[in-house]
Length: 332
Ligand SMILES: O=C(O)CCC(=O)C(=O)O
Ligand SMILES: [Fe+2]
Image 1 (cartoon, protein in one colour):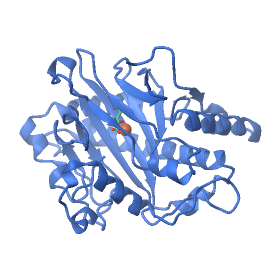
Image 2: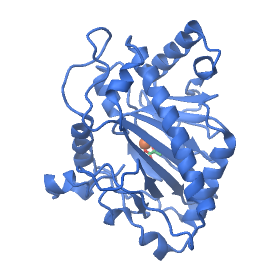
Image 3: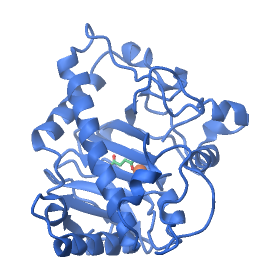
């Protein structure tokens, strides 16, 4: 049962991001973020720097894309793409241990690279042809939001690094060409969902920082906290931030990676967009500089992502390591 009493912390990022932020106003935000991620693994933010118009344009773009004919969406299937970019149909994701596949459909883009780069995290994006969806209605607003959410993901990473007592500049050693995947999601209305089916089944995120935009008023996200499910209200111009397993592990357990799930109980579709800001493929734990807290270990971002993708999805059962490494079974 979702708990009505608990709410996630709501953090104002202005005292950290604004041009007149001072060392002391920044320190306050760093402490708030540390406390929230240590307790809940999740928090919500205001004054995050992503313009409202850009959020609205993104949501409209996702809605537009999801309305094109099914066969045109399937022609862009992420299952056929070596870097897992493109369209994920309802039912394509089945987490090990789930009773039923996810109801959601989604579309993925990431850092664009001309060539497919092993192990399959970097490569060209897929876009619908302009005849199908004019660039002004999908590609342009999506790309512009991707860049904004990238900037915010970087700031949150820096906040987390500072929260463990390290200088924020450590991030520039950790990342020059980070893996940043963006997943645009549509949840069908409740009446189109099978009995017992979740929009997204309970899971933790795999990697670094997740920045989540929920369409205002379309609730459905719940976060597990001490055995209870906390509903996360979908509020206008409020983003949700959470830490993934890589951060939790690298922080030596100071930061939490909380389980969460989505059930759209409404009679209207729900649109959301999650950006997963991981880090450079060959980067190792940025929380270690010999000073602050942090766990030891020399695994890279690529090692941890591949390991998690292999263990979580049934899709991967029976797949050979070479196939995983080629990126054939890479999904969020
Ligand atoms: O759509 C949401 O509100 C959450 C999505 C999510 O948890 C995910 O894609 O990992
Ligand atoms: Fe998630």
